[in-house]
Length: 121
Image 1 (cartoon, rainbow, N blue to C red):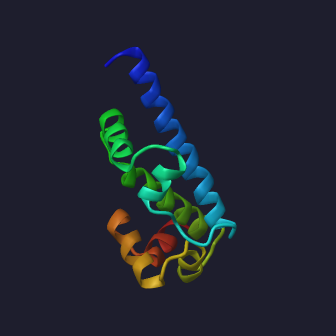
Image 2: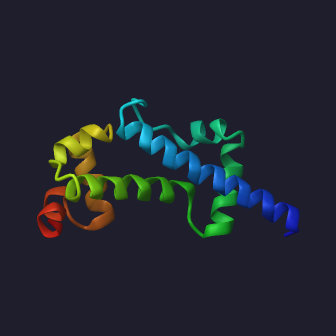
């Protein structure tokens, strides 16, 4: 891959991660009502959905969705432990239905939010 293409790829990945950080902050503080789809995010950073997937996967070995969900999970963990929020409140704050949030959390950690909180407080 040429140096110019590599720089462009790094720029795209940087825009994606920056957008994710800002978007997550906006969801948590309530200024955004829901999480965007990856297609919408790719539109927001002016790149095709497939190109975003290809670039991120080629340069990181992981899909964009992996990083999106990891950032959501890290925020949820902070809310459960650092802010001592109840799992239902964390789910609501992150715009999840509580049962879907619990499934999402358990898929990633192997524990329910309540179990995680109990172990980590």
